[in-house]
Image (cartoon, rainbow, N blue to C red; front, side, top):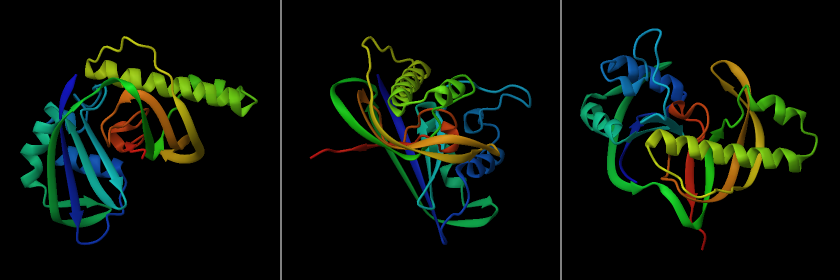
Amino acid sequence: MKYNIVKLHLKSDVPIGATASKVRGYIGNEFSEHMLLHNHINEDKYIFNYPFIQYKVIDNEVIILGIDEGGEILKKISPEITCLDVDRKYRITEKILSEKEADIKPSSEEKHYKFITPWLGLNTKNYPKYMALRSWKEKKELINSILVGNILSMSKGLGIIVNKRLYAKTHFEEHIVDYKAVKMNAFTGEFKIHYDIPDYFGLGKGVSQGFGCVKQIIDE
């Protein structure tokens, strides 16, 4: 299926030292009338779906990704974003808004990707199973299946029907990161799979807050 994708790139007079979570909090509060910016219906209800707006802080610069309706919201609020008040106030000196259409679907060709932000593939259900496995081979098989599951979850959230079996090849390194003030296992590295994933889309937990950000590697 084809989706309209808008990418808003914000640059400031000094490198932005905040997390994507804090950027999300600021933008969501400033434009609270748009639920997709913060995924809160009210104080007690949330939108539990693949996020159509995702925040990233990469190399001390902010990238906000909008998909379909999320992209329309980004185009609407972009002229009004003049600063980011996160830990300190950053003056926005440049805004780059780009728009394109992408076909997100299983691919006949194997595609090569890397996680440019840590991927939170483990959750409360699969973490005990992962930790109980003794060999790295067993752990890798589980991680591969979790990654495929994340891609299928993304597909479901976007309304994409996947009618073929997916297999992932991975080469990851394990890290410990902070997610909502909790230490969690995360992974960075590369993977290959027969699926078209647009650059800067996120997989796994914490997608709206910058985790699991994917970028394609073009093999020569």
